[in-house]
Image (cartoon, rainbow, N blue to C red; front, side, top):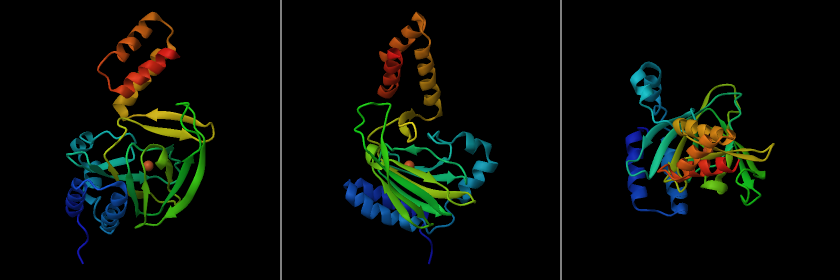
Length: 241
Ligand SMILES: [Fe+2]
């Protein structure tokens, strides 16, 4: 039997999501498409080859938040994206949330997923209390799902000694521009952005640490500019520090 081709997956997901299914339908039916895609062992062949040998291809990549996130497809209507995440052995990836629903399947070698329950209600934007809800090792072919924001906090890790890859389908973001990393030891929350915006956020935070009128003025201009709301919020927070 021929394996389920990437073009067919994209076509099926586009058609399915165009019908505006609710979350439970997405989790049920979308999961089946991802499950089928996991059986195609050739999905990454071209992309990995080009990432290594084709400099222009590498430079043209969309800048995702995490450097281990390879974007395979983004729907023109932004209804979903398909990504491959690369998990190196021995690297502890941060606990994080997502701006959208997600369907995640182990693809090459097993991946470990810990899901967390958020115990506080986010009253303080910089602090969090988390509790482990589940801790599972997913063999290739197995699926897990995440929900947006506080209902989908998790951590992925490679439990083996060879590089692992998982395939991820994310839906339309209900919170755009950033995700949050959580540190369960210090109970802290950190907003992280794609590379360019991250550099901008770090510049804003630095201005907040410079107690001089010129720095304050730049931040005030930032709050009244046409920057996205989350970046204006960074300026606002920096002014309060
Ligand atoms: Fe995730």
